[in-house]
Image (cartoon, rainbow, N blue to C red; front, side):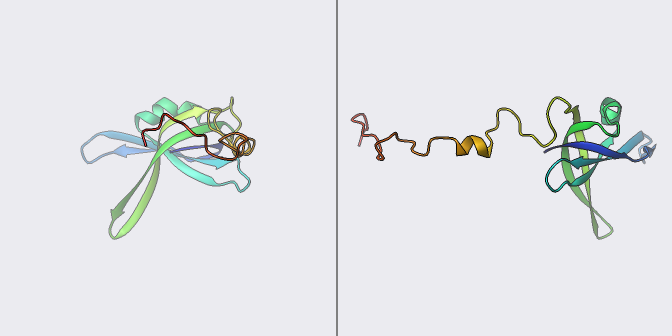
Length: 130
């Protein structure tokens, strides 16, 4: 899944050592979409993804974030995380704007309403096998 918006908050980096003795680090960021009704979405970068994309995550930056949503159970309660696997600068594209190759509603509305031509009926073809 992807979401585009403006980075509005950066939480402190967290880290530690796992039970297996491996070092880990994680940081949470908050993105606000640029829609009629903006949504705020907190996502996290974990481990090597924080090293790879952390420099792009500056407050005020327009970003496109690709992420996975995962839920897990602990002591009878469910917890959901949004873990980013790719972050890209979206300064070249207006936040919330559709990609160039995706038709918009305006494109569909301007399409001809009669797909079979001016006759108003389906074209007859003598090549049909039935």
